[in-house]
Length: 377
Ligand SMILES: *Cc1c(COP(=O)(O)O)cnc(C)c1O
Image (tube, rainbow, N blue to C red; front, side, top):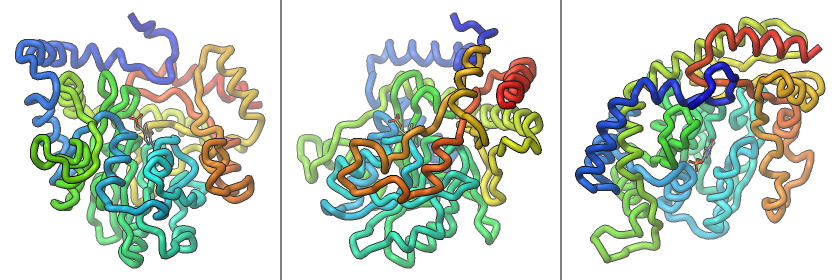
């Protein structure tokens, strides 16, 4: 049983109580049918997710990392091709590039949004560049209008890493509104339990509005097979199981409520920290809603000491991400060094993420923000 008094970084128990009957009935159906993989719930969930995001092709898969890998595998790239992304993200984004023998090209981030700095993309493009992977970090869209313009001009594919922003809306300058993940050539997401739409185990999805890409993605996730036991390409095995689909169907119906609860908590924090000389609250871009996968502050002061003090007072916090990818040991082969991405490097020393989930009450939010302010001075 979860201690609801205790402050958690993520708290999934309240959501479970709310969807318990539907989930348990759905699980029972799976047990009765013994259709554990790709059962009816998986097909229904794929349709519902496609409708929610306005994408025509959805391939559910094993996790968000697989989703990114499958997306790149669907693009017919050659070893050595270059993929532009940021170093201020979870390692999976660059890992799949490296695993496929492609080359990650890290572009610095915008100091306000934490997302790829669109003004620095074109300088990083070479004849080998094939794709841009914007990461909608912490729950807010990268500047997709500019990214799509650049991609079109240079004939590049765009694969959105939407693991943290599912449900966010981006508004183009002509007024058109799109969900993140539905604007690039391919969108990828993770349903890791702590994500805004989280399963009760590993899960992910790849989606596209392009019929050819949609078909290729489906094939690549299924051993490269168009027909059973006939592999046209070298693919992978990555599937969503029926139990996870039951959970995701129940939660997708509530996703907008979950987002509203996160935004309410973020608004509370914003008010508590407004105009503090040492704190920058999350920037809210005019062209994107923020679904607050993380509530991340930029602080001026001894961040690590602050984190320890908060911990002593029962408040968990996290650093997303302490070591930028270009400085990670495993990525040294790509030739980056300290100083190459100054904004990324600076922010990795200043960010701190506070508890953010759908169950935060005002008493907890008050305690967290008051304690945070006391510890910061
Ligand atoms: C969580 C996450 C992933 C990977 O998802 P998994 O389901 O854990 O494999 C990829 N990119 C970003 C930005 C993430 O936050």
